Amino acid sequence: MEINIKKEINTYLFVLFKLMGGFFLAALGIVFMIKANLGLSPWDVLHQGITKVMPITMGQANIVVGIIVVISSVFLGVKIGIGTILNTIFIGIFIDLITMMNIISFVDNLFIGIVMLVIGMVFMGLGTCIYLSCELGCGPRDGLMTALTRITKKPVKVIRTTIEVCALICGWLLGGYVGIGTIITAIGLGYIIQMWCKILKLDIAVLNHRSIIEDI
Image (cartoon, rainbow, N blue to C red):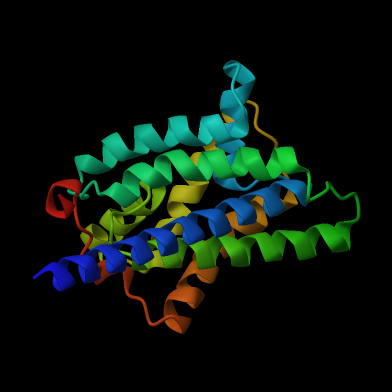
């Protein structure tokens, strides 16, 4: 009995480590896309727009938006798991930490900017699939994406793109920076996430995310 309990604890700790790794990759991807200097991704246009009207950082804006989206997702039947809470907090923290470390510089070259944008999208897509596969609760935006995918029966790329465009419009109205990179990520990120889903053999529509109550 004691051995089984220790095994379950070790397994859960491994899953938490995997979860945090997914968060870090997603945050790294976001910073790459910001530093590409071609226009912010749709969600980051919204985050930057919020920083225009509130005295907070991009990471903190990420957390604020995450909380609002989580509350909205609850009404669509999304389970709130420990992963949902950790996502809401840590991706924003990782964004600010990576930015403060200044290990990724802004670029002014179009070609290099596009390369960095694609790298950021690849990291973001991989990180998203990794933490979703942990089934500890969807991230705020991914919970919304998963719920709408399940409800509408539409492909994830269509749902993701629709959500991104809505976030973009709201962010632009608040004064967020829109450029060619914004259009690329709005259209391409959903396809990249779907690509990683196929590579990792992950069907987000059938994932059985556990709620906090179930984990307890």
